[in-house]
Image (tube, rainbow, N blue to C red; front, top):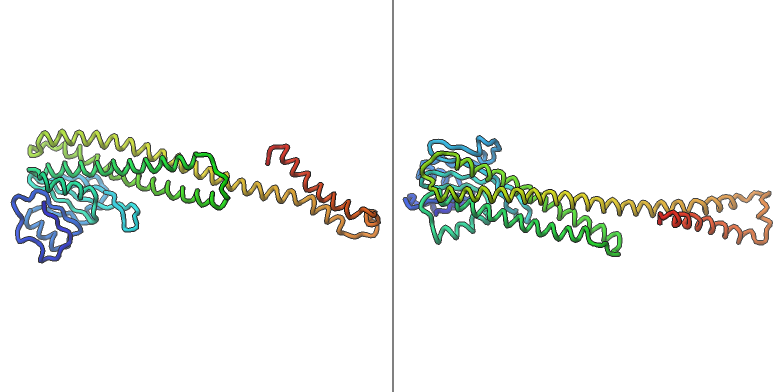
Length: 317
């Protein structure tokens, strides 16, 4: 295995060892790319070629060499999931991988490859696909566990928290659901592309991919199909939790509007009574009453309590 990760030109080996089966190119500079092409006779895909989305651009078999590309998922320095392109150039003897970011699957498989290297490029290709699929399965399991936690929090009995704390909790829940949905969506894109790569390679009648490797690829095909089903389940769960959370937010907003409505309705009759007795016309008989002022206060209080009793009897409070 030879790893090139953007070293200065002086660090490029003088020649490629004939025993080198896997060349991993991580964010290489033009000098390293030209060196690999000169040593292997294979074209190294450019970043523009790797980001093309047409199937004919992602899956190509020319002159006995596979040129494949797929999106992969990694995390940026802030911890947010991002999609990057991965290129695979598979020939009879060698595998060249081209990527722009560090990927956990490569670290895992690189350690395994260092201890037990394979005999040909097909060994490295199948082993790397295994590591990529295993990594996506691990991430989907983590997303599923996080959604289970969110589901318990959303559907558990509501505590007597203050409205501000409740609103903050719902906002955090929305962000968490959105992050899970975004990650599951990116994983699904990668799964779909890898799911196209495997049957495409298997469909070519080439004699330098041994039968044990083909058997492993058939197993990978079944694994990816099961992961696609699980990802669909997670997507449906994300939608359910999103709808439930938005429904709870709507209920909280309705409760606030209900309180404001009750306050405004309760305040209308006392305001009307106070306005009537605040006109101070000379012919108003209550102005001459000894108990006119207490009477007006009692009427104001009664007109305020009356709507509250009515709302309670109707079940609106």
